[in-house]
Image (cartoon, rainbow, N blue to C red; front, side):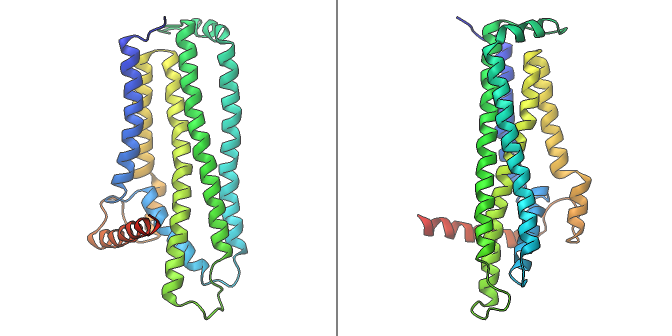
Length: 260
């Protein structure tokens, strides 16, 4: 019976805990510190607010379609990658031969390679579900854009237009988060590949992925450029912005209770 070594178990546990912990960390930190997800949420609200005051939404529909096509591309690519991994799983002996030719490879037992390939396929299954759910939510946004208050309509007050824009932006934001989760799975899948070489390489690659994700989310130059459009700087969110976030959170809680 095949059993993983203690080092393999530690490396795998470190990988799973790191992935889950970073996802939670990024979600909570976005409430107190400027990040890509935080500023994009604000810009999405601005986009939908502008949309409700336009006579035509042709350009907006084209922009949303471009994003949706990108997510669809990743979903299709994930299926191809998954097919490749499953094909390799069926011929694990050949994979073992390749691994044996790589220096510093720790263990190339066929059973362990098959287990690692199976776990790798689960990562891409997870990514596929995230991408397809993002696609569906982008579709929901398309419906909402089609139902947006007309520019010349007098049936909607400014308050109603703002409420519609904020809730539409919330759906768009959720779609963006699911897309981001799918991309994050790709990053961690790349780190997972190093497990085929050595558990220490697996741990090092996982750590590197965490650092890269953190830098791109909180230290990237593009973040500074995006924040500049709002006159903001990287760092903690101000008290006034925290108040706005608290109002939005209260609205979300109210919505969930109403749905229940």
